Length: 429
View 1 (cartoon, rainbow, N blue to C red):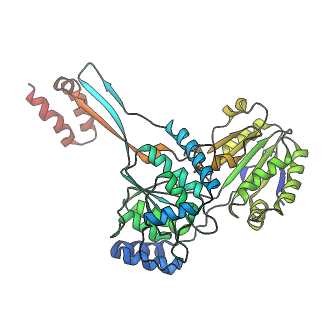
View 2 (view 1 turned 90 degrees about the horizontal axis):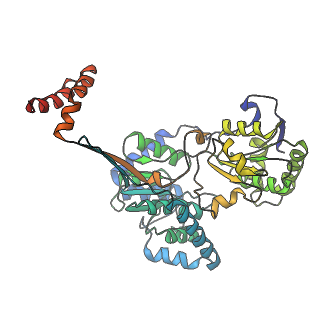
View 3 (view 1 turned 120 degrees about the vertical axis):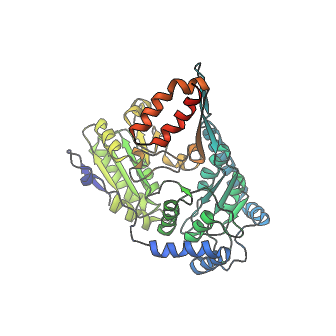
């Protein structure tokens, strides 16, 4: 049963239990896979797919016919739902576009910035106990809007060598035409180093198990490829006054608990009566869930209900925790919004469950976890772009700043830097 704790200025560790990602060291195993795929390419990747996924593949890449056939097998109503979600995701992320700028000054100096899309990205879509077509849309659509030239998706196949139809359908809706049938560290290696049939990419994004995560970190540390932030367990925090329906709040907490036994669900309220009602409601709803065993372990181990003297204290706790998802189930939620500084995504009001953000609303559902919302942001167009600065100095502009530039260089003991300026200024005499 989820614990109820009365807040009395305790340390956060005494209030909330945030599970950590397993930290066992698989570096040696993963590095061996990376080295092997780098050396042998397709041959090694196919061998690891058979070893780890039980798939006896003849080709690493899904054909256009496979993609179309998978799309055709998906229920038309679900296809329509995914297309509506794609429209909302597109509309939201279109507003994230950034332009470069130019600062042309009267003294002969021109400064500027260019915002350029990455040439290629790899999107890792995990397999395992659940498949997430929504994550395909959330990653691929911003990449498309950003103007990425090549988007390749990789996901582990089943033992028959097939990719789930809903994943293929989501990829087709998002405009992905290059799909690789690989999971695990071997998929990361193929994307990072390239093989005979898979061209290397500039950045790899997407969550995975400890082998995938370690492979991404190793490739990044070697300077081979860029990666996104490392994802931790899912989490939700709900801040609610006494007026919310306990059944709504319990359902919202369980919506994240069913993800993973390590997921965390937290409720902060100023009502002891509501806390008790939500605790009981969670027990009643748990028995009806298909993934009740997972949700049970999650709420029992990592769930907490915190009773606070007032909700402003609750907001301070939220900022210290920096949750992935934060619901403000209060009257006038927009008035409370300025009090929240650290959260991945904020859901306002009593009729905006976190589920809307996962699927239909449009903002990205790939969010910072494990407190990273203190310094990180949701996945967006910036993750698929890079910035270049440029500068131009006329002859007179260089002369006006040349002495300062030399003085600065010499203060750091870099005489060649200073000489690059002085050699030009000598010619101006």
